Image (tube, rainbow, N blue to C red; front, side, top):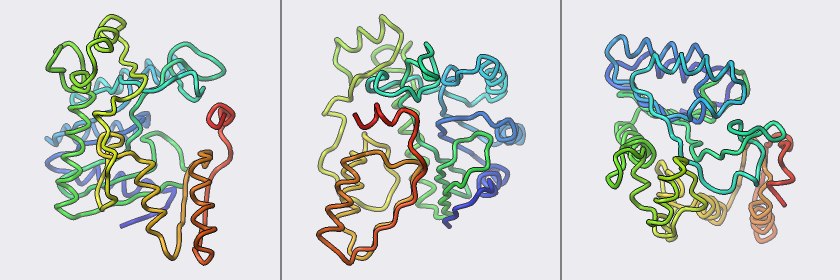
Length: 279
C-alpha cells in the first residue's frame, strides 16, 4: 500500500495494532501523542525499540527538557550520536553551538521506518507534530517484515550497540575505523566521522527490491542513477527539495537522450542553507 496524505492514519494504526514487537527508526521523535502511543504499546507487553537522535538535536532548551522527560518513559529507546561529514557545510543542524539558527553538529541518522509483526512501514514523516503531505509505503508481506527487522538490527549494531573494541563506545561502527580516528573519538567523546572508509562502502551495487541502509548497503546516488538509467517510459520524483546539481544534470541527460521519457518533479522551495549546499 502506498499513500500520500496529511493523515498519520497508517502510522497510528501500525503502532496501535502491534501485539508482539514494534521497532522504530526515526530521525526525530517529538510528537507527544506518538511517544504516548509507544509507551502504551510497551505497557501491553509489546517489545518496543526506538532508534532516534539525542535531545540536543533540537535548539529549544525547553523542548529538550520536555523531550528528555518523555523519552525516559520508553525503556527501549536508543540514541544515534554519530555524526558524519563537515557540519560547517550547512546550518540546518539544530544542535550544539548556535550559528545562524543552526548548530555545530551533523547527526548521521535520517532513516524513518517502523516494523511490527503485522506491518513494515516506510514513511517520509518525522515522528513530530505537523500536517504536511507525507508519503507512506506499508507492506504486510512476511518477507518484508523480516527484512525490516534485519535492517533495524543492522542500524542498532552500527550506531547503538556496545563496541567490541571499547564497550564504553556506543556503535560497532567504531570497530571499523582506523586507530587514529578511534583515538580521536575516544578522547573527544564526540563521534564525528569526516567520511566513511571506502572499505565500508560497496561500490558495485545492483538496484533491486529491498530496504537499503546507505552508504553501508550501497551508495544512494548510484542506486538513484541506476533507477534513472533503467527508466524507459517515465521518471516521477517527489521530494522536499531538489538542490543537487549533479542529480539535476543526470535527469536532464536522460531526458535529452530519451525525448519521449515523461519526467515530472514535485519539490518544495529552496532551504535557507541552499547556498552552502550547492556552492
